[in-house]
Image (tube, rainbow, N blue to C red; front, side):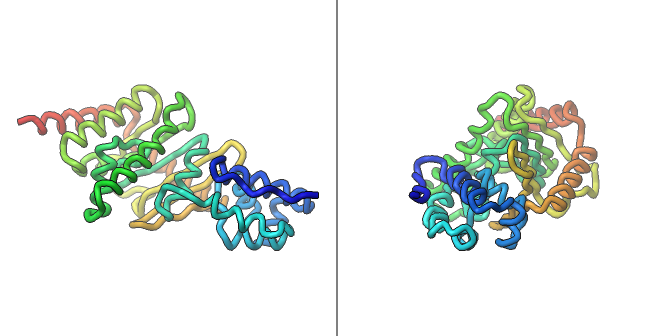
Length: 279
């Protein structure tokens, strides 16, 4: 009987790789938990690989070929599935985000990617690397705008963002850029395309003072969490940790302004930026 065919990189490599993994696992008579034990990972991690919500790393691919007897198939195709236009530390989160049915995010210092305008994204990327050429910045901004296209669907994914007031008041790219950026957020809120709340300075100490947080839910895979620092990021799939981080987000929502008051503040700041830009 012929073995599985190598994947076509032009298709959806991670989804195809996940389907082949499920086929090979079931052929071996193993449950996700049993395969996870042999790989020293959780059963939920195996489920996320099969659903295509997690990246298959080379060391995992090698172990899968050994455990499932797939004659190097996963190692050969791992590279195709891992290709990404995003920075290495963020690639897995961005690709998982595109498949999520619900995204909850707390942004402490800047407007998060899914809410950014092109001008704001350009200012952020230029600040990240002031010596990079305009051509490379163009590529980065284009990638950011491609991510945002997932909001073109009228209802999916559900997007709920808590913005720290600091993100709204930190002037990024100039006042005109900020005015446009905040009007864009307000427009998404008015169109019911995003639930947006502002965590005001007056809230004082809160549950996520240590940094940014993104939570993602999926139709056929366990939820994931993602948190990041300067040029580093981590995807977390441990169920107990994800539950705790969801509680952290719920506490942020409880401390934030209502949706109505948040929208009023965002629109007021947008108007201030626009007026101050005038001579």
